[in-house]
Image 1 (spheres, protein in one colour):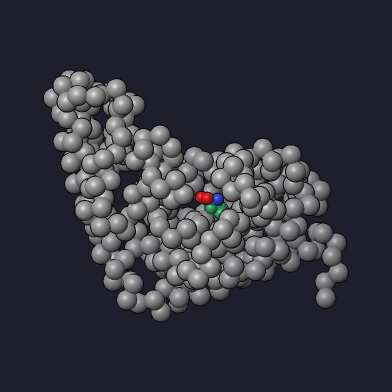
Image 2 (cartoon, helix red, strand yellow):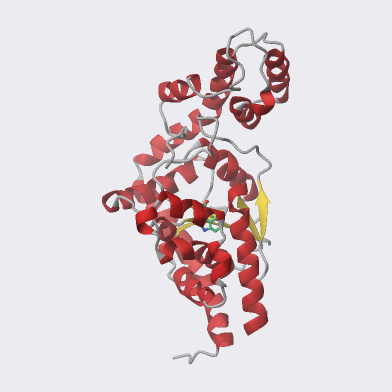
Length: 326
Ligand code: TRP
């Protein structure tokens, strides 16, 4: 069976962007592929983070994956640091990765701007560790949001460089894009993100979700209620595309362009659909919160299955590197 790997950072809160761009797609893919879904804690330490809260965030992230519908019977769900070969392979990949390639990564440039006082080696090596995550399991497919495609391309290059220097061990992984539209934050300007505080968290109270939607930026040229709007440049319409059926989309498209529907009406319809999709997830999450032992068990089971694969790959890697096997 074809193997998939994907990862998510334990940033503490999972938002609509993560859900639509990645997790929702993982739930479908899990039915057809051999999947590893990973909470990438070692990626998260490349920027400042609250150490005291880290454990909680890791568990919470796994919990949300389960609440969204990932099943430990159908996929391996694990924590990156539980399988130590991830970092071991990353070190080896450091030696085949040109510095120029990592320096030109958009995410590295962005994060270097956001964290000027802490531009560390981990931040730069971030996509190298990501390549190790994927290739440790020889995964050929990586379902991610569009912003990660550049990193997957680098993973391909790392695989190619390794293979040509040491022997053909690794596949060249391809991204799988969800096909869902790219959701911006409620500012209607930047990608939805925790750091920019423009996000709608999937665990947020209904009232908070509505408040964020109510005040979210729409088509900025539509100033008065009677002004016709343009759905093509409206982020609320984009979010509708991820949550609403085609007939609703058509109604809104026409209503917005003819000013028959105001932004608030449009947002109310969106809120209903978001709520309908998120409510069962939140309910499941609340139930799981009472059963942390179960989550720990799922992660143990995931790590144990993944360790087996990781050990096999690393045996091959050590062999082709010409290391002395103890
Ligand atoms: N960099 C990814 C993100 O920020 C997370 C990630 C880490 C990942 N390792 C991965 C995604 C491997 C796919 C495959 O979303």
